Length: 55
Image (cartoon, rainbow, N blue to C red):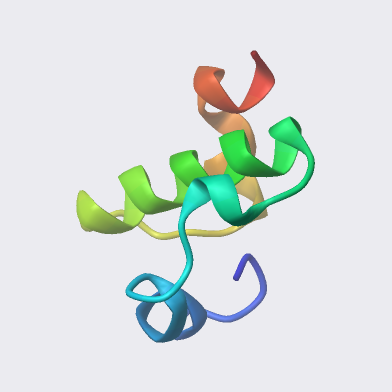
């Protein structure tokens, strides 16, 4: 999802944060969804810049 701009649109309806095994991956997904829903780009830089991805 962080490598393809179209990936979020493809998976946002079928994947939930609690589908991930590792809590860190759940947080990253939550940040990606927040950015996507806000109309912001979803990539490694924007997700990594969000404070919630580091908690």
